[in-house]
Image (cartoon, rainbow, N blue to C red; front, side, top):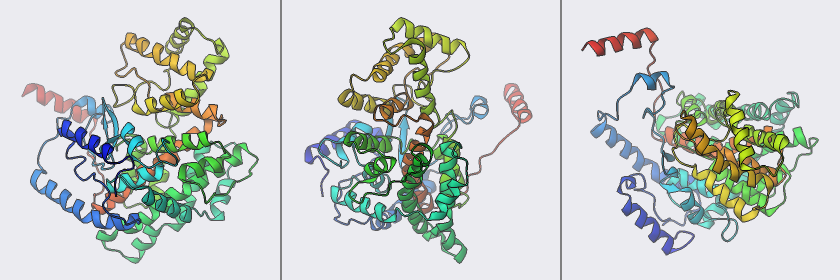
Length: 473
């Protein structure tokens, strides 16, 4: 099989790999799909032994190689900047942004199969890429779409568990409750209780992960329809793909909204292992908690305002700008409002990032989508103005390492344009997307036999004494 865009696209990819030798190892096994096998499980069964040997060799030959020095700032600052996790599915570069198995977002947009010509990539294609390191054919993505539809069955007790909560409960609380209720059907838990070899852990994990990914759009859309649409639930459409179906079940029939959802789910799926939701999923999974428990824990981290809840905060802040200053706000007025926000002790939501030091590529691909489909939308124009106004102000402030917009600075405006105006719900969309990345890595955690995560902690007394000894030495 060949890449979707043909030999020329493959040639460009090979050329890029040659030019950037530092990436050669990370994309070593990214290759054209030579198998006509449409079954993802069979693909993994072939790949896993090779990667197990690769990790074993790496540890045996280079296990004592130092990766850097740990400073007191890192210990106090939440382990920021420490290299301490193995995360195979994606890698975040401070300047280039995220790469999924070595591919940038623009490359994924070009190479991954789409629902229509020149359309946005199908999330199922990214799932295949994250799990296998290979760009799938359209036939393989279609087969995976069908498998996910077949698995998209949610028992009634899950909905009853959600219904036990007040309708006013935050959407993320309801969503996480639904995921916890799904855990009753965990294949990994059943297999572990019966007794299963460690070498086989990945197989029931795979079953749970694929079923979880398939089911979370139903749970998420149920929460949305319960809260905002009088509980009128919309069933799965067997003719639609993963992103299109999610949009459909929420109640949106527009082709453009379906395309937006495909893009949204794809770009929000994974962002290497150090962010709160990804790290939490990995941490809990390292205790051999099943994928449902691990992902539910990740959702609780995602619900924090310093992580996934930020997309809600951005749109609310942008609307507060409009409420106070109107839609036709001048740059000077906007500067004043930004300073007003900062001087009140608040942050401008959607700007800055813990790792990135340039504009988030996920922001840029959403901006390109907006320029293509909604260039005259007033809120999009305001977002464009903020892109010009905010970074210089944050630079002048002198306290922000990255003054550029991140993914959250744009997503809410796009969703709002197509009618999904309920900002409190936005983090649930993020959660559905993140299931793909977290579950993909969890399968590889089990396949590679990664151990229980247990970093060492110290007290302030220990740090002070250590620093005194270091100074005296």
